[in-house]
Length: 124
Image 1 (cartoon, one colour):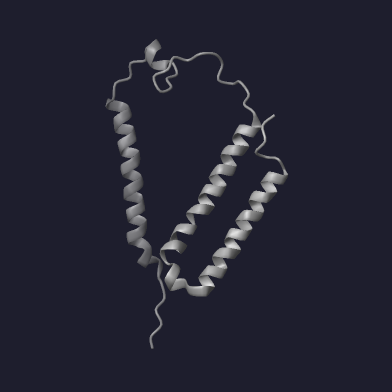
Image 2: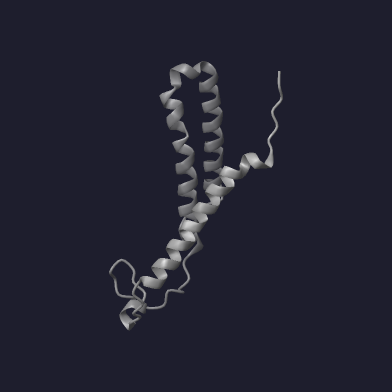
């Protein structure tokens, strides 16, 4: 059996493709910046958010509870998404798959109990 080893010349097509892609990006950005209109008016420089006029200061502090609830929602939502492939392949995975999913769901439940005990979801 013959061993094959990689030589630096073998990576030349990959390097060329990366250089062409980067060159295209830089060329496109420079070209659009040069030939595009650059009229700066007061209306174009004002902040715009979903068609609503700006009211007040954007630096007002938010409650940390809001962000905590949002992050916990994303965390538990993403973990629940992992249950879908298990449900689709339930028969093929057999008893071992069911035991592993019970372990996963138990850990998920432990995390949820921890969040409840720390009162992370309670508003004052």
